[in-house]
Amino acid sequence: MKKCGMCNTQKETTEYNKQTKTKDGLQHYCRHCCKYYKAKLRYNLEKEDYDILLKTPACIICNVTMTNEASKSNMRVIDHCHDTSKIRGIICNHCNTGLGLFKDNIEALSNAIDYLKHYK
Image (cartoon, rainbow, N blue to C red; front, top):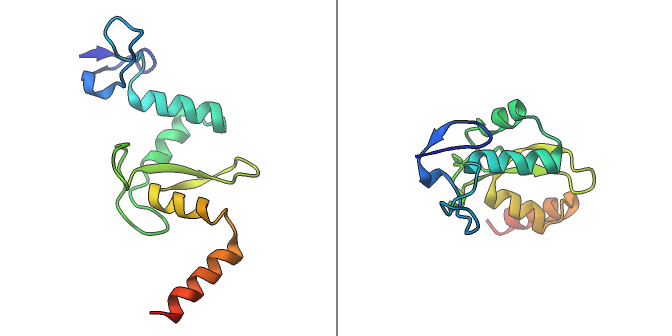
């Protein structure tokens, strides 16, 4: 067990990422707090808003049930506009990657939908 330096909660050591420079070999903050801290820096997101976003059960695009585990393909990610950095919501990693590969281009996505419909 280890106490998180941010949320002051005792958690299993499996809830911490490794860090070789510390005495115990673990980061000072639990994984949840590390993710929140990154979101705060990037999107100026408050803890309460971050926790609400993480309660989104399913991806808005594909409807898959999402997880917070980084090793899973259906992991929750914060989707944002690359021009404004404004948060659009929480979607699964696959859908976020797909939107990114299409560079948020609505016309290209529409063409892809038409293409799939044509060959169905």
